[in-house]
Image (cartoon, rainbow, N blue to C red; front, side, top):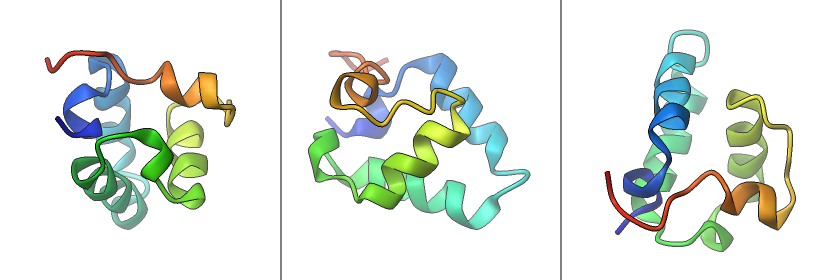
Length: 73
């Protein structure tokens, strides 16, 4: 199951909303999430963008891990 499938619904909505302001980079983050199965496989730039778009500004392993659920929605 991809990270995009496991991204918590409220964060998925926020990420989709960011496409209005940042169409290219928000879409690239979504594409990378769709291809990755674990957050450690993400590029650092995607982690920074994701934390910024979701207003968490938490780049720690725990902070990133908490963005995802263990099951698909």
